[in-house]
Length: 482
Image 1 (cartoon, rainbow, N blue to C red):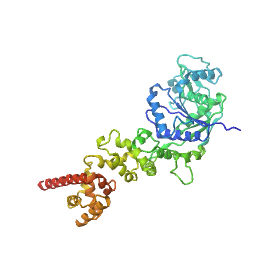
Image 2: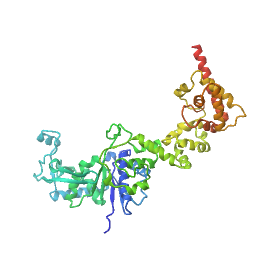
Image 3: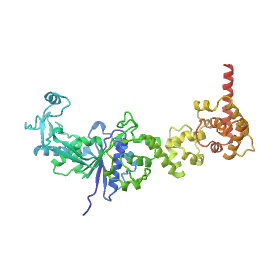
Image 4: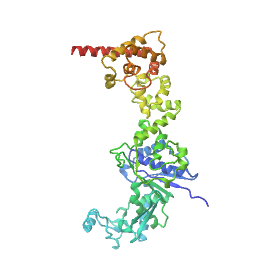
């Protein structure tokens, strides 16, 4: 018997940003589609809201999906389709449901419904069910929910979820002007596109019994339903774009690797087993089973994502790391002039930096001292390192020692020279190198100091030590005069 090809669908509404929860849903759909040679994930843009129908937003969705590996050139990808292209079919089917008696016209206003129920929180009471109204101004088309009995949604994540018909009002499927509502359009598009599986967020579960009733009214078997657990922040509140960092694009811009993001998102509600978490897509995809998704809420832990990203960065070849850092090194917004960036110097320092950054954007403060004409100013670092009795004395001594032409300008020689200089002042290496580091790099933490000094070169190191010494002397003079 031939296996029915899986056809999942991902149907985002254009909003100007791609939510990490939507990215998780897209990846779960993509994994399922890729498990069959003929499997497909259909991208459908819910664009019937004119205010949210902007071509650039749709382009943004496609770019964001491409970043996490869902490529429209892949044979498992289909679309994008636009819901607005099927409006005529939606209208026609709404009329078919009316003619068959599965829907009826209603002229009740919201205020009238509330007056009859004497409660603004209660839904529609079926007032027009048997009035036999025909189409007309101010008359919406409502679906006739069967009386008695429940609708059972067989959910792959949550099991059987029962919805009593008494709790489902006769819902509107088309407005008075004939335009369809989302609940009808969504079902009809799934029918048209032969969707076999609907995998989406938990917030859509409450809409599912209405959609299933529409499938049944059309004498069609509903798709396989799977509602994914809600994603929450550290306060265990649902992720909100008003409160939390939820835009996938913001993580991309910060320098998270796509493969790390994919790995992490796949673990929000699902685990591959084998006591492994760091796992490439090629290994996760065949293991994915929608039935294994946990129904409990999934915590989006940015610290854990950062750790994942650091692991993936360390797994890159040095050449790949250098290439991926380029947007932060040569793009707009770098703190140095483009002419001052030296790719050969960065290639030399890259192995040192690769083990110290968790996101690619952190490369800038780690290497800026190499390409800035003067080190970055960090007053807190300056005050911490340049304490009275240590800062000026050590900078002055290091300047004299480094000026010795007999000193070989290598990391090992510079370390020995600094250690000896510090010892003469009664300082261990850790204390001795701090003023030198801040004078040369501007910060108390960073890449290994002596390798950094070697790359920066004798002349630039001496110039920076001289500038630091001049500042220290000026500060001492000002303090004495004050």
